[in-house]
Image (cartoon, rainbow, N blue to C red; front, side, top):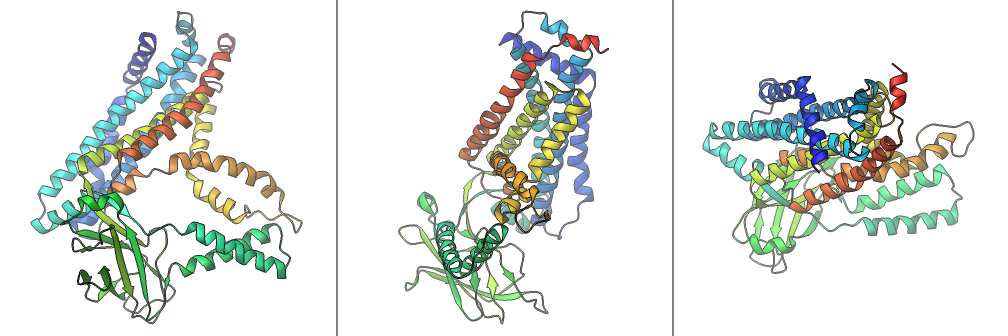
Length: 458
């Protein structure tokens, strides 16, 4: 371990020698201080704070991510190209110790920079909160600067898939469908089945039952929040639609009914409901009456959510930074692995290409779900691109999902809790599993690389 720490210290010295640490620290602090002056919000303290968290943490992640890739590629590739690595490799230090030492040095640099920028964002949020009116401070305390758990209706995906397959088999008995047409037909049928779980026709009432689970034991006497979102096929001249809500156990006196609410489509709405409306089993029943002249659609994924207080914002913010740190650790492994067998410019380009593929996860998922890449071939069957790329997408997509399953910035900006289990899962999937596999590849490539050839290339 002493040898690994020595390499890590050399990495720190190199970062200070080239003033990388100072430059990145200044850029991060400038982003934290400068963005609030440039951002435009809806005029409310809640809107400004949510935008501030989203944009500042996004900029911090982008700056740290790019600097991590650049430093990871440069610290190893340049040492090899400039023949400095031979001095270290000639010592009684194993190649894997050199590689891990550089990774540890980069990761510890990121930890220091992330802590500095994160503390600045946290301090700015708390400072601005104390300067707001009492009413706005209450909104921040209960809806934004808080860690709220989320409860949703039961998952119906298994039922939707079963009904979709049943309808598809019935259609196949009547019409012969194959190839890309079969995938498209399955997708269309699934959307039709899914609509039955989402639509609230005009004049009808839709009911949701949400199980609060073990959290019910800690929620007595504490008000909850409903977070809803809907879409409509037709526009309203006023831009809003009327909604009537009833929350509580039907047939009992423990029921809360709302006044008519004016709600905008394609927008998240949060409103508070009284405490103790769930039954003894912890099930909360929510009913919505649609008095409008158009059908309203509440998406299964995020159309109906119950938010409840879970922990403090300080711990939640720290856990969010922990997930960002896991991302940086993975990027350091990717950059060092690229530099283990490529020159500095090529390694940087390769690492950025990998990053672009990760950000394209949504596009890959849509292609796999639809069964086509959208590239049309000359024949009526699947194109050559579909035959080559779709299997590759199916292999890459699970790896991308290991990283994209965690979104701390979105959770922090909406006041959602990031549990310790999620941080542990992020560390296990991103750092240990995916980062471990990539690191093992990088160490293997570096151990087999002929370092003496770099001398001959000068």
